[in-house]
Amino acid sequence: MALRKILGEFFQPPRLAVFLFFAAFFLVGQQVYDDYGIAWDEPTQLEIGKANYRYLVKGDPSLLEMRDRYYGPLFELFLVRVMVQVPSREMYLSRHWWNFIAFFAGVVGFAILLERIYPRRWFVLLGCLFLVLTPRIFADAFYNSKDIPFLSATIWGMLALILYLQKPGLLRVGFLSLASAIMVGIRLPGIFLTGVVLVLIGREMMAHRLSFLSGVRDGLVYLILSAGFTFAFYPVLWHDPLGELGRTFETMARFPQYLPVFYLGQFLSPQSLPWHYLPVWMAITIPIAYLFLAMIGGGVTLWKWVHHPRSVCYEASTPWVLAALWLFSPWIAVLLLHSALYDGWRQMFFLYPAVILFSVRGWEHLHKMIVRINFSLIFQKVLIGGLLGVVFVPVTVWMVAFHPYQNVYFNRLAGRDMQTVKMRFDLDYWGLAYREGLESLLRLDARGRIKVFADTPAGVRNAAILATSEEHRLDFVDDPGEADYFIGNYRWHPADYPYSDEVVSIWVGNAKILSVFRLTPIH
Figure 1 (tube, rainbow, N blue to C red):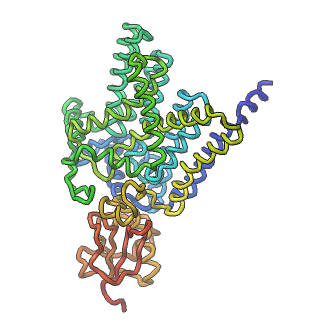
Figure 2: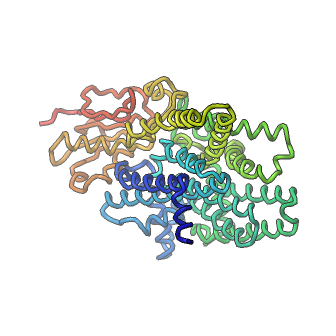
C-alpha cells in the first residue's frame, strides 16, 4: 500500500511534469555545455581559485597581493578541486559543466521555493520555465562562474529564509546562516540577505508570530553563525580579519572598473551610470511576456497593500514582502553606494528570481480571470494553452535558432532589429564568438602557422578552448601590420571595422557579432 501511495503521488501529472522538465533540462545541459567559448573573465576567475587554493594548502602569500583577492573565492575553490586540470580545453569544458550543475541546483532550489508558495505544482513548473527559458541566464549558466552560482546561492538563501519564517527554530537558523555565508563566499553582495533576514524577523515579532525573546535569540544566533561561516569561507580575511574586512567592503562597494560602458549609444564610466541603467537593461533583455506578467503580479500585490495596509504584515503576504525586498534593496544599495555596473546587468542577475515570483503571480491572476469567465472547460484549456504558447514559444525558438549566442538576446524594446540594438548597446561583451571565429579561420587556412591580431583580449583567451594541435597553429601578434588576419567582436566598436577582405562573419539577426578579415595576401 505504501509503495502504491508513493507511485500514485509521483505519477500525478503536475509532479511528473516537473520531474520530466528537470530530466530534459539536465539532458540539454549535457548536450550543449561544450558549445560555448571562453568568457572574458574566465582566466581571471580561474586564477582567483588557484591562488586561494595555494594559500589554503601551501600558505602561499601571493593571494594577499592579488588585485582581485576580494572576489568571493568559494565557488572558484570548488571548481579548482573538481575540474579537469589539463589540458586547457578539457579544463575549461569541465568548468562549464560544473557551472551548469550549479545553475541546475539553483533551479531545483527555485522549484522547492515555489512549492512553498504555491501548492499547485503547475505554477512550480511555470516558474522554472521562466528561469531556464531566459536566454541570457541560460547562456551564462555555462561560463559565468560569478553571477550564476551567486544567483543559485541566493535562491537557496531565500528558500532557507522562507523555511525559517514558516517554522522558526534554531536548526533552521543554522541552515539560514550557512546559506547566507555561502552567498557572501561566492559574491560579497550576498551580505544583503542579512538585512532582509533582520527586517523579516522584526516583522514576525511585530505581527506576534514570533515572541520578542525568540526573535532576538534567533537574530543573534544568525549573526554570529553567519559571520563565523563567512570568515571560514574567505581565506583572505584570516591574517587580518578586521582590516581585510573593511578593505573588502570598500573595494566591492566601489570596484575599480575603468573600462567604458556602451549604453544608449554613448560610452560612459561604470562609476557614473544613470539611475535607470539597471531597470533599462532588465527591461530590454527579459522576454516581454515575462515582464508583462511580472507587472501584473506586482500591480496586484501593490494594489492589495495600498488598499489594505495591514495586509503587509499578514502571513500570506510574507513571500511577496520577501520578493519585494529581494528585488529592490540591492538596487537601492547600488544607487546609494554608486557601485560600478558593467557588462549589462549580470552583476544583478540574482534579483531575477524575485521578478519571476511576480511573473508567476501575474499568471495566477490571469488564470483566475479566465476561470471566472463562463467559458466551457475545453475553451479555457485551449485559451490557457494558447497563452502559454505566446509566452514561451517565441523565446524558445530564438534560443534554438541562435545557439550558442543566447547571451546577446534583446527584446523589441531595445530596438526594431539587432543592427539598431548594436548601435545602442554592447552585444557579445563576453567575447564568446571568438571561439567559432578562430575555429572557422583554422578550417579556412590550412597552414601550420597563422598570425592573428585580436581586437580584444578575449580573442587570445579563446584559443585555450581549441584542440591543442589547433591552438599551436595560432600566433597572436600585437600589431595588425604583422598579422595575416584581424579578428574582432565589435566590443566598444559598434561601427564596421576598416577592413574589406572579410573571410568569416557571425550574425545574430541582421547584426554581425564577429568578423575575421584577411590583412595580407596568403602565399
